[in-house]
Amino acid sequence: MMEKKNSPSRERLLSGVRVLDLTQFLSGPFCTRLLRDMGAEVIKIEAPPFGDGARYAPYVRDGYSGYFIQNNCGKKSVCLNLKDPRGTEIFKNLVRISDVCVENFSPGVMKKLGLDYDRLSAVNPGLIMCSISGFGQYGPWSQRPGYAAAAHALSGIMWVAGKNRNPDAPPVAPGAAFGDTGASLHAFGAISAALYRREKDGLGEYIDIALLDSVFDQIDSAIEIFVMSEGRDNRAILSPVHTGRDGYATIALGVSDTEWKNLVTAMGRPDLLTDPRLAKIQDRVNHLDAIQDIIDEWLQTYKHIDDALAVLKKAGIVSARILSTPEAVAHPQIIAREMMVDIDHPVLGRLPVVNSPFRLKHARAGLEGLPPEIGEHNREILTALAGCSPDDLARLEEGGVLYTREKRRPENPGRPAPE
Image 1: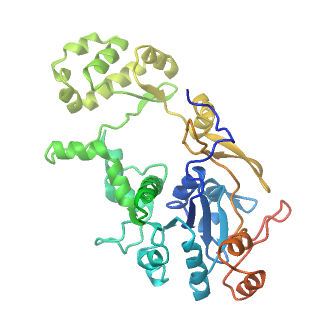
Image 2: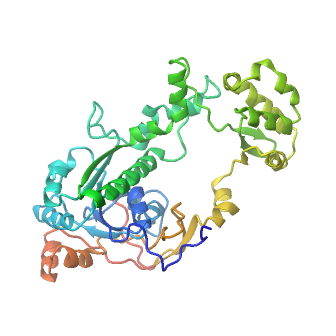
Image 3: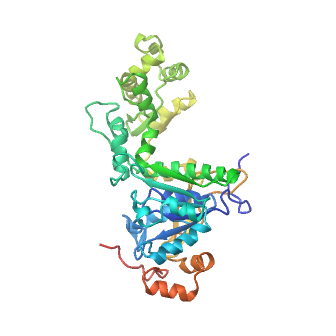
């Protein structure tokens, strides 16, 4: 049986793997946080003097951004100027003894810095390098700047989400940056696979991940319907939203014969089993709007949504109340799965942070460690791994190649974000 908690005595699956993290904001840091949660040592390379722009993202408290904290726990920070030849040489020294490099600059930036895969693999043939960008490293849009919003728009997901039920409705933007996190998840999987392959043949790999590709890959049902209808339809079978008298719920539409029978029986509508419009699976797919209306009408007969959901649960129908963020954080299943864990932040105190979703039987996984200050680990990393002496570090700091921000205390929350 799977253990509920991760025992500290068990090793993590990626223990011994060293990752150089050149990413900022979300696409990339989300990926490298997952690698860290699996045990990798992640060295975050930040540009002086301000570092990762996510440090100054919205919802900053006492000089600290929750956006940055969430995606950078457990990493080590080296604040290094890669535009200076001394900085690129130090970086190459780190590449020689590292396993993975992840970057999310615009395509072409790494080549301008002299740090593209061809040059870095010459330094370390076993290096696994992953580039994450809006539209990938090639194609007519590759040189355009691309954030998750553009990936959402171009992939079709905003159109499908907004117009799936009502063709007259406007497109709908997702409430989170799924383009960024989806790309990070694809990158995490590809990096893990490349590490496995390298164990067998010693070969490195270059991985090209695009936000657009990652979102497009995930709107599976809309694409399948478009293809199988020979282009006549592009509506997806999405999780429907039903309005009750005290909130909202999602209820499986009963597309399969068994689900359909159980659903209509639970609703007290056995007459629908003989409705010729709804006799076959394809008929029900073609009449999703009518089915949703029927479910809405039934749901409105209950004063409380939870009473209706209890009926559906007894019948084995997939359903759930649609929760707000505060309600989701407090949900007993989220709590039981330990998806929120506390860190002891030196300034903010006890702070809940979202845990990673990995649950393993024989190895540890999950959030471990605090987010770093800018350049907090310059001395530790560069003396131990890059051959720098204390005198070297002093000269590099004087020359603007390195930057270190002293660890902040509660009475000194730090400098404001750059304007």
